[in-house]
Length: 243
Image (cartoon, rainbow, N blue to C red; front, side, top):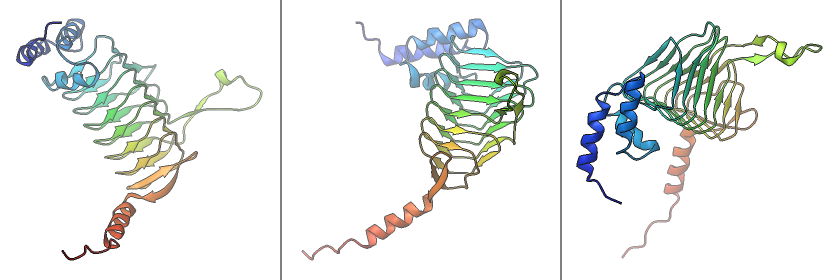
């Protein structure tokens, strides 16, 4: 296998990313640029080369109200879909949607994601009847799901014929970390700096700086307590013996 010098690969990537974009030819240019770049997280390098970011040829965009910020990554298999009367999807600067993440909006729903927020693979944001909003610098682990609505369950009526119901939007603050497989339901606010443990189902508000876990998710401690505990441990260390 011939090893191509990094400088040559860099020139190749920059050349093709100059022509990249949302349309077919722009996607083709992005795929040619990707030949010289490592897969997966390597796409961040490509996205940083142009304000148009990196849009994979296999990403599907079926949305008339999509607003993309600068240096966005839409990785392989990403789907952004607008159902009937669906509201806008707005992605801030440096947002990363990794493989097979799905965003869809329907009647009464919209999605807004703040700058430098990242969604790992196979996340789903389904905004019907109410909004889904994320602040900046959030880290969302794989397989997280967000549903600001539910199906009715009235007896004597098939589930597929039940109306959708919503208690309110999902609002997630800045610098929030959600572990693998977290599910967030309607009318939930998660405050700045909160951490939600893997596998949790969030059905109620979580305050800023809290660590929450469980089904349903409940606050188990505050992040500020970690600093106090670390300080206590250090203050309880025995003094070093004189040399």
